[in-house]
Image 1 (cartoon, rainbow, N blue to C red):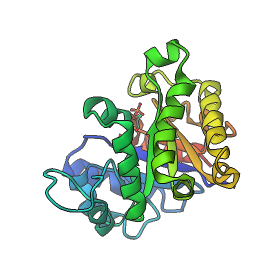
Image 2 (cartoon, rainbow, N blue to C red):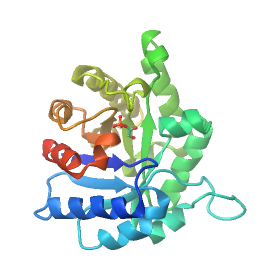
Image 3 (cartoon, rainbow, N blue to C red):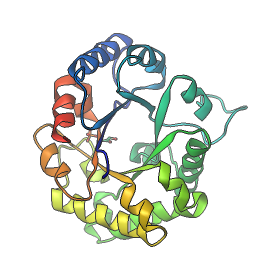
Image 4 (tube, helix red, strand yellow):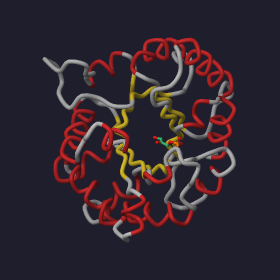
Length: 250
Ligand code: 13P
């Protein structure tokens, strides 16, 4: 049985005050517990406040990226060990915004994935095709390329402690969600690619869907057999929306 995971990727949003307010509302809303595992990934500068505010709660803390290196002259970067210091247990790697806006290629994503594993952080590896790639019929090819780069570098065993998020680029922040069938089809492919290496890991790894998930469409997505939760952007910034999505995963 895979425990559902609902993760909020706050991206570059919020003030210190609004972040604290959102966290307090989530803690209160989940006071009675949740069947799903709940994760929030605030911006780096809010991690210290989040660590303190989440101390008594079951909500897990994660970061949105990390450096591929462990320490040294890497101006502006944050290491896996630093994230551990703030009680992060997860970190997003390979988000499409990092790939497209900051030129993170498959090789760098693989190195970041390994940095996460090395520092005992669970990587949430994002994969997904652009609209152009979907329309030209290369979705599976793209997902396979993105996954294989990490598989070749890190090895299948590393995926025993990883999460994969399928985030079609055309669905991110556009209000255009993949249909449950479209998402399920790619999730099945991802599990098949992993199963060729190790059936147990393929069966147990959690596959999240991300891209315009809202309270109104979460339940039908989460009902699909290979969708084990969601990676939520915009809707994770409003406590009530996010809590409804968490409930939809139960
Ligand atoms: P939206 O939910 O805003 O579409 O963002 C999805 C996403 O990129 C989460 O990582």
